[in-house]
Length: 268
Ligand SMILES: C[S@@+](CC[C@H](N)C(=O)[O-])C[C@H]1O[C@@H](n2cnc3c(N)ncnc32)[C@H](O)[C@@H]1O
Image 1 (cartoon, protein in one colour):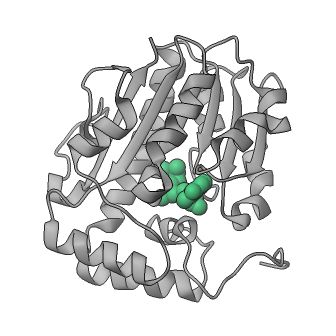
Image 2 (cartoon, helix red, strand yellow; image 1 turned 120 degrees about the horizontal axis):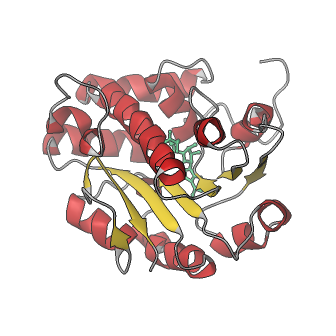
C-alpha cells in the first residue's frame, strides 16, 4: 500500500484486517496475520466461519431487496472491501439501492473508494464511525444525505456485535439505531459463538482480547435477545449462518465449523 493515513496503527491487530486475512484477502499487516494465525492454531475452522458469514451477508441483502422490497441500507461494521460488497449485491437486483457504510477502522476509509462505486441510479457513502456511538452515525451528513428516514431502511450488523462488549451497552446502541428507523425497516445481523466449540472458542476469544480486540462471543439465546427483541424474525429465525436460506446444493459445514449465528427481522 503506497500511503497510509497516520491514524492507522499497523502494530496492533484489527478485526477488519484479521477478517480479511481469514477470507484470503490482501489487506493485512504482520500484527493481523500473527494474531489470526494464533486464532487458527486453536480454532482452525475460523476461515469457514468467515466464508459462511460473508455468504450469509450476501443472501440476506439479496432477500432484503428482492423479497422484502428494501432499497436503503445502513451497514455498520462494513469491513474492508472484498467480493460482493453490500451495494454490489443490492444494486445487482435494483440499481437504485442506496447504501451508507460505517466502520471504525481507518484502513476501511483508505479503501472506501471501492465502496463508493455505486450504480449511477443509486447512491453509496462511507463514514468512519463507531457502533458504540449510534447517535453520531444517525446525525452524520452522509446518513442524512443518502438515506430517507421516511422509507424502510435495512440496518446491517453482520459480525460486528461481538466486538461490542456488554460494558459498552450494545443493546442501547441497537435501540437507538432501530428507534430512528421507520416501521417496515429490517435488521440483518450475525454473531460469532463458542456454543459448538467451547474450548477452542474460549481460546480464540482470549487471543483476540490479549491482542487488544474486545471480542465477546455469545450463544444463540444471548444473540437473539440482544439483536432481535421486539422485532419480527423472518423464517427460519436465528440459525447458524450456513442454515439461513441456503441456496447452494450439497452438504453444508457442521455447526462446529460454522460457529456463527445469523438472522433477519422486520421492525413492526
Ligand atoms: C468481521 S468484520 C465483518 C465485515 C462485514 N460486515 C462482513 O460480515 O463481511 C467486523 C468489522 O466490524 C468493524 N468493527 C468492529 N468494532 C466496531 C465498532 N465498534 N464500530 C464500527 N465498526 C466496528 C471492524 O473494523 C470490521 O471491519
